[in-house]
Length: 68
Image (tube, rainbow, N blue to C red; front, side, top):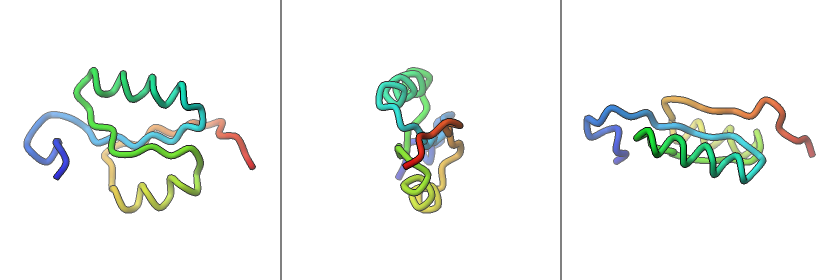
């Protein structure tokens, strides 16, 4: 059970970001504001299945993901 299911005012957020430094900064910023990071992916392929299974409230997606 996620924390947001317990009646707390927080969003479940999924992060799609290939830069690990930016991933960490986003995690810290979101947690500081009492949001739950439900998952992180470094590319679109990883993100697709995870987002479908985790059903986050919000997705933060890097618009300049590096291609393979």
